[in-house]
Every structure is written in structure tokens, then in C-alpha cells.
Amino acid sequence: MEISENKQKLFSAVQPSGAITIGNYIGAIRNFAALQDRYDCIYAVADLHAITVRQDPAALRKNTLALLALFIACGIDPQKSVLFVQSHVPAHCELTWVLNTITYPGELSRMTQFKDKSARHADNVNMGLMDYPVLMVSDILLYQAACVPVGEDQKQHLELTRDLAVRFNNRYGPTFTVPEPYILKDSGARVMSLADPSRKMSKSDENANAFVTMTDDKDTIVRKFKRAVTDSGSEVRYDPAAKPGISNLLTIYHAFTGKSIADCEKEFAGKGYGDFKLAVGEAVADAVAPIRAEQARLLADKAYLQEVMKGGRERAARLAYRTLAKVYRKVGLYMGE
Ligand code: TYM
Image (cartoon, rainbow, N blue to C red; front, top):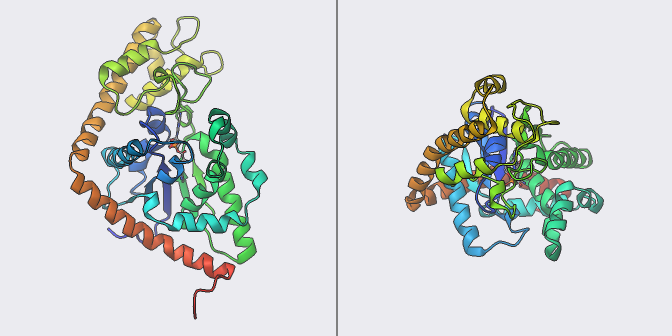
């Protein structure tokens, strides 16, 4: 199916920087498939973002293909949506250059994620890390996306996206759609670490027990949940301030079973943390297993994945270059008569 002119566009992307966690899944990827009917969706593997921190080149190549397969295994239909690898469409870098000329260094240096990553990678605070949000702005604006489904940690980047879109439009005339973030209202927008529920679950955590990945097997998942840090007391109750560990597990259980938080609390009334943690581990493992199996099946069919990549690249490039040509014209780059 071709991307139509009348449905609103939606863009999102995930970095192929290591295994994808259930935080990525709950906060973002899980919603991608469901949104395909309402919007014309464009989903990218953000490999250019990933290289802002050091990557092992062989692992990055492998993770790129694995993420593409995971997207499809999670229900993204490459016939319906545009699914592609960011570096395959050079317009992302080209628009970044132009947008850099209307971005102030202070806007980038005060970004929470830049500060966090600079502290974590003190030996590699590079210009790419600082410019990361502008590349993200370009991803979104190139496709005239009206909606951007992301987890809560991306909120600041989306505010910058809106600011730059408005700034450009004011300076050069209407060019970009100003996008709205689509962030879950419940706590699924910010899944916390299993080892320290005051921190976000992150695929780059040095402690592998802090996160569960979409490729972990059942034993590993159950073991990680058994070890999850919980709170004092013994009541399974949703109260993020007083019981951050248990509340996080309730969020995860709710996300993977579809049961309401209230029903989850009822289910474990009078039972201890041990029973609850085991049930969460089993529910996650059971939900992740078919996705993992489908991802593995797809990864065995390289020809199919290559075909998806090629098709996605062509469709994405067509949309992206339409916007880029407009931008170049507006800023006065001479495009011939
Ligand atoms: P990345 O790869 O870090 O994360 C992918 C998505 O997962 C969400 N997420 C979480 N949600 C809930 N709980 C968590 N613990 C958690 N950890 C991550 C993220 O918010 C994100 O939605 N910069 C982006 C990738 C990107 C992008 C874009 C997104 C590049 N270009 C354009 C939207 C639009 C990122 O770092 O994602």
C-alpha cells in the first residue's frame, strides 16, 4: 500500500544499541502496530543515533537487522507502514545540517539525556552526542509527522522538535508540521530498573539484572524477576511513592497481561512478594516467547529482510526528499531554474 495524502503521518524510531528491553517495548514498540490503522506510520531503526556512543561495528550490524526483525515480529506490517534503516536515507543528515543553523548550543547542552550520557561516557563526549536531538528532530520533521509515540524520556527532545519546527516556519514560511508527542498516560511510559526502581530501565545498564530484554529466555526472565528489588512490607499495592519496586512490577504485569492494575492488586491480595514476582516473570516470559520465536524465524530469512529494507528505503526517501527539497528552496540554496 502506498502512503496516502489524507491520513496523518506518524514517526517513531528505536536505536539498535544492544538488546531491546521490555521498557522499550512497553513504552513504545508495543503501540506501534496498533497505530497503523489510524495513521500512515513510518518506523526507523535509528542506527545513526546509536553511533553517538561507542558501538562494536559487527554488533551494530547484527543489532540493526535484529531490530528490523523485532519490529515485524511485534506486528509492524512492512506493506502497510514504511519500515527502514535511518542511515539508508541520507536526507536525515542533510536536514540535520540545515536545522543546526537555527539551533543554539545552549538548547542542546541543557538536555537531560545529553548530561546523563556525557556523565556515563565521560571519555567520549562527542559533537554527535550533543547534536543527537537535532538528528531526531530531522527524523520527525522530514516526514511531516503529526504524531510521535515515545516513552517519557523523549519528552524534552519532542519539545525541541516543536520549537525548531515553529522557529523554521516563522523564519521561512510554513514548511513543517508541528508534531504532538504521544506518550502513554500510565506508568508504562517509564518502566523502571529491576535493580533500582528509582532509575529508568535502560539497555545500556552495566547490571544485566536491571533489565529484561525481548530476547531473554524463560529461565532468565523468571530469574531476573525473582531477584527484582522490592520494597519493605508485603502487600502488593500500586503506590509509586511508597512502593516503587512493586508498583513497577504491577505496571509490567498490567502491560503484558492486559489486566487492570486494580485487578492485578486483587489477584495478589494476601499473597507474598515471592508469588507475585514469579507470576510477573512467567507472564512476561509467556508474552515474549512468541515474539522472540517470530524474530528468530525472520532472522533466518535474510532475503526477506533485505527486501523489506530496500522497499522501506525507497518509500522513505521519496517522502523525505520532498520535504528536503522544500527546505533547501526556502533557505535559498540554489537548486537550478
Ligand atoms: P531508544 O532506542 O532509547 O528507546 C526507544 C523507545 O523506547 C522508549 N523507552 C522507554 N519507555 C518506557 N520505559 C523505559 N524504561 C524506556 N526506555 C526507553 C523510548 O522513550 C523510545 O520511545 N532517541 C530515540 C530514538 C529515536 C526517535 C527518533 C524516537 C531516534 N529518532 C524520532 C522518536 C522519533 C531513543 O533514544 O530511543
